[in-house]
Image (cartoon, rainbow, N blue to C red):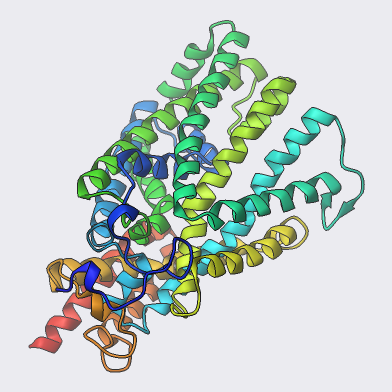
Length: 477
């Protein structure tokens, strides 16, 4: 096993040419709080709020069942990311490099670019959504409407979009240290404002907020059948929600100070954030039901109905911070690493970031006028389902085949070495990947398998790992 410092590659300055190189020494600076805030930012999106709020309404379960399912899902995701992040923490390597051990030095480019494609798409969309928060802020302060539209966006919308796009560039241009700082500020800030929104709704509901929450929480219409099926569905939904980050968690765990920081950050970050965020979403939804007479699961609608300029300003800043936070965690970093892996010696962190931002500019600008009109969901879900088996293959390869030992020099030797497999592709991994991916994708498109779509990721990951292990054992026999 080769020590990190013995790898024959040149280390550049932060953000310059060291995108995929192992993180070592002082670079491994993330404590448990930084890991905690990865999950805080990943959960605290507008979509995440709407998703969690809907769980108490749409699944026919009581609040206790919903909370139990959320806790179980949080613990399950925590267990899975501790497994997938172990190699990143130990060796300081990102997801595309870890994938080389099982898929081959060339074969790893396929899953890396698929993950990057999903990330780039959502990065562009989230840049647009973050710009709507800034546009809300500008309108609240100035009272302006924005005038004529171009591609579905007013002048204020375009100004906000370009400004947010540039803001993302400024953050990543300064390196991962600035990304960590932003996440550490945004996570707690969003919670402070959400608690403030609950207090406002409490005051306007004349103290009836808790009673409304208890009504939603109790759900007298729930039956044993709906409780059991709802519990399973919620667990499956939340695991699927974090599926992409589970695959590439080594992109973040590589910056952890040590294994203890990663484990503690995941323990505090997943179950705790899940419970706190869910509780605030429940209280906010209940307060809106009392004050406005309807159960609103979109927080922007709640803010608009309050007719408060001050609250609109605060909410706009909050939505902006939350959206940028999840964009950096779930989309930007995996996109940059996946793009850099196409030509590691030529594409630096900043160059990959600019490529990602370039695509984001096009995707975000066309979102309202073109892309959102088409069935993009099936495309993105298909790519996500395709990636699922890779988790199982990587875990089986790292723990069962290699017993947790990797040769770093060979991981970075793209023309030979143990992970080149003769032609750069590990045939057993590619075959297992293909078979399991076909099954995962089928759950998205084949009606008879639609009932399994919520569990496609777990089933695909398990199937990919099992087939890979069986093929290797057969080859050894």
